[in-house]
Image (cartoon, rainbow, N blue to C red; front, side, top):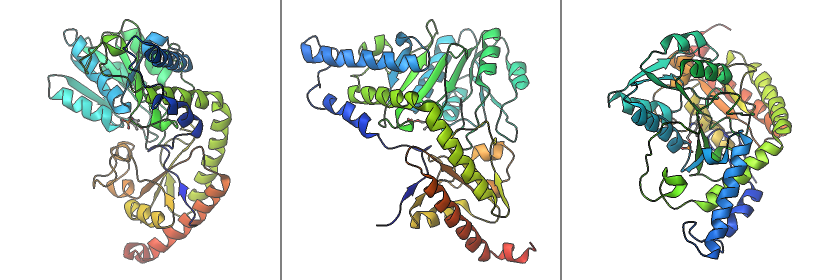
Length: 389
Ligand SMILES: *Cc1c(COP(=O)(O)O)cnc(C)c1O
């Protein structure tokens, strides 16, 4: 059998067998609508309550502050549009960053077409925002700051506690897209002064199409999905019970061995980075240490990222050029250009993200194959051959 190595855990993960086992009964025998009153419905209602409580504890929230959604994109849309609509009489200015996921960026663009003003914070060469720039940008008109917890392309972890402190001091709401961070790094919404936080189950070994938005008690926010009174009247629609139970189980597993798994992934990540940086004219994108445990993003001069992804695919190695959402698009990554890469440099980068099934053997193998592939690719490149090395 052909060897297959999946190194795209930032795009999505498989569902862990223990998670699937927990979900299964909620497709078959425990199918009752939680809004009904008979026994099988009470069982599903109780399962949802238990999941909500479990998830809330892991980020140090209260159980009534967790609202289930159809994923990370819906949570981001809800946080930003919901706060904008509910607070538009107080102000119409939103601050975000240039390196957000498109679920945040395109939501902000939409609001710009509807009378809101959005400022996009720049980042340094490691992908970090400037706290002073943030503080200077906040005016009386500012209602919301939205900065991602950790970047999905380069893995940089933002100074969330400092951002939270500034927002609290200035009296503006703070939303963070924590889709890449939840389950990978410790999060405490209270000590970090976070008002709204988005998560997505399929990034931590739960099912796809399932997410949640944490909304701090007392936060003024409108609903986006109107209908029945599910989620305490704030997000209508019959609950995805199996999804909710699965997400909760997946997060429980992630939290229970987070320290251990984080150490293991950091070791593998650093080994992969060191191995790939031995390739001539290779450079790391993002911060060397303040980065997600499983994220590697490297540019290889004179190599086309898209062609490399397809070439590795034929070897059974699955990696990405950036975010899955923009793969296939001809545009260079907005994240890589924001950290100062030229269009050419941005298009010569690869993202390799490690996770639960990654072994040291996989890392060694990928270093070997990639070194050979990069070298072969360059040999067929006229500009490379004309240059003296
Ligand atoms: C994956 C991802 C999203 C989107 O989540 P979905 O559940 O796929 O809608 C949003 N933000 C970040 C940072 C992501 O990595």
